[in-house]
Image 1 (tube, helix red, strand yellow):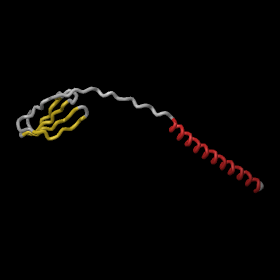
Image 2 (cartoon, rainbow, N blue to C red):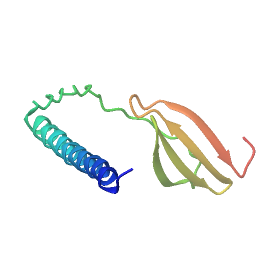
Image 3 (cartoon, helix red, strand yellow):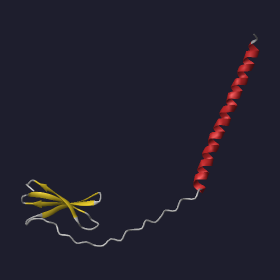
Image 4 (cartoon, helix red, strand yellow):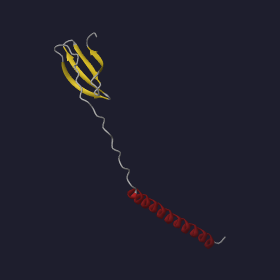
Length: 112
């Protein structure tokens, strides 16, 4: 077999692969540019206004013994946790902020 003939086939293969690489790179760049322009010209969805539920003020009294003081108030999901310190220990009172109802108490350091 002639060496010139084998080099000719190799040369054709290298040129073909080079052309495929150039076409593939141009295709990737074209897709990126198309997606950038398509994303910027697409209409943005209108945010739907969220209607705020009307709330009515509430009044509630916490069942704390004499000498009890409120140490902290923490929001826990859909409840407020009020930590009350008393001479006998302490309590955590759970309040529903929508209506002011006391939903539970946790006694700390003393008998219930």
